[in-house]
Image (cartoon, rainbow, N blue to C red):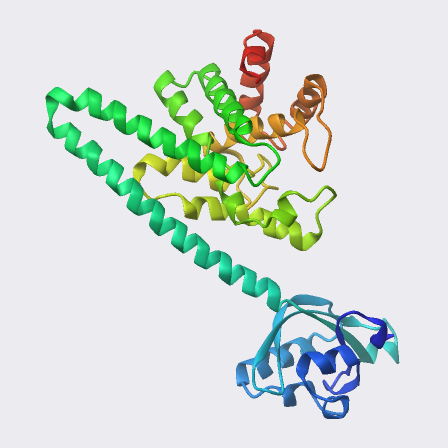
Length: 347
């Protein structure tokens, strides 16, 4: 049975002795089975902290466990793995033996390291370019006669940079620039319907354009996959929220955009990601963009789904009030639809 698995696997007794090991584990460790079977698991590890971890798991022999660890290879290197272990049964003799599977996650760890490096490079580049733009703004404020013109030029330059960055990220998806334009318009209109001043609503609108900028860090094989995502693929997709926040400059101009990028997948009841925020803990801008993004995704075709009718999407939004969405935002959105102005926003 162990040899039939497509991952490393061992059978342990309560003393931590390896009773059986499959061929896949021998390949992963670079050791023949004879160096594994009959030896205690702790004998493979030279670091006391690792031995202590194994001892703590053996102390809870009856409990199931899943988590990340590493396997020492014969050449002295460490192979990162995802381990999963549980007893073979509830009564003797099966309860005295534990099956542990080990899945090689070295490729995933390398991908995470590569993404971190890419984020750092993009963030430094973003800070450099935007610092220059903001320096121009500060200079224009010193020249009273030219302040309006310089401010306008700066805003246009920043907006152009925002649109270019947003379209660059959306180009990896099936929908190019139209999606971010719709999100901008819908976010601004919902905010105004909620009584948020026009200038602030406009700022929320153009900040919403960058809500999915973190998708630049997600592989195309996941973004453009036509079917359901595997668990590890969903985990990589979720990284775009934190990645988007880290890509954006730390300058005040992008504060709202950073909040939206990180929190626009948080749910009102706390079931969202990446931080599990709930209710008023979620920034208002992110709550508005969350609804706008879901509605637009539902009513437009994606590689993994056909488009829904506006009526079907509206029912889904209504059902999600108080669970996925802020009820106040839902009421404003429904009012926007009922007023007849909503149809003018659709592109």
